[in-house]
Image (cartoon, rainbow over all chains, first blue to last red; front, side):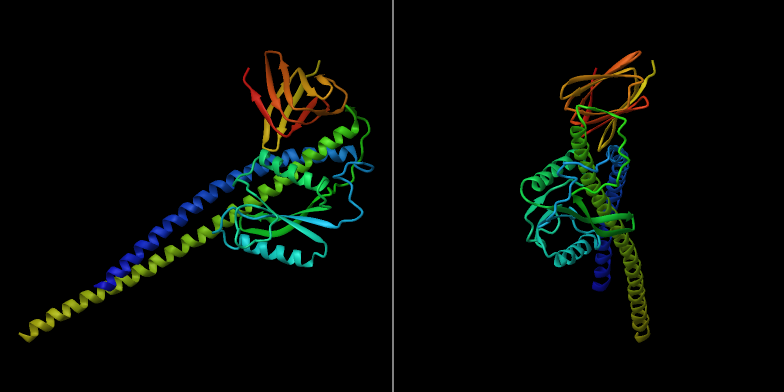
Length: 274
Length: 87
């Protein structure tokens, strides 16, 4: 009978695992919806600021963020990892991609990590930032200010964002995007506008807004991917537990049947002996 | 006079929108008033309070620094942060 009890206990333990994975899946789904909505709302803002920048024309500007430097000696990588694990290969594939990228880099490089995951794995981070599961404009602004300061004062000549780009709920692919210097499609340069107080101030301000929206978009995209990856991973885990419970139940029924059969044959055998 | 479609946007979405008659924007050189049929303009706005009014109401919105663009009776205020103040 010990075997029967053992199987029953295993079923119970797998059932509680199923409960955990199911609730994690539900939490991830709710967070995914939230970041996806936020990404949609940000899109409008980003489109408008980009549209205005293009309309201004950025051809001959002194703006430090728009003019590429002649010599790019030092590059800063901003690696946006997840906040937690249990999301399939989301973090690991990003790390692998980043390591390959960095191995090819010949210039001096700095590394900033955004997110809580991988404290033990990524040991050479120069700095870490914590970002919530659904980053808002304020968080994006704080990070942008840091990056701007580093670019203008402390000698990073290029800033590259490395994160999991969100293709769909089932697919995220690691990629990199140069944040600074900013590259914009050449605009028409409509000059039929009034500028208050002058064109330079407006351009500087617009660049800042655009930069902030670019950082915000990358953060949201990375988080959306993380939630999607976790949801997919937890769906698979829940399905696996269902399957395992099925197999264990079958095993339990076999064992139960065998025990009953043995008991009957013992009784029959006993009766025959009398 | 024509009315203006006012939109106040931040990275978190649209904070306030309304069809208004007059908007007062905080800028580095004092406040700037915008009415309907304004010439196309791009204006740097500073952190402060945006005021607007229409025939039977008015509203104040606290905004961060950003840019306001006026074109064809549409005023888009793109700012780093914004919050509607209770009247």
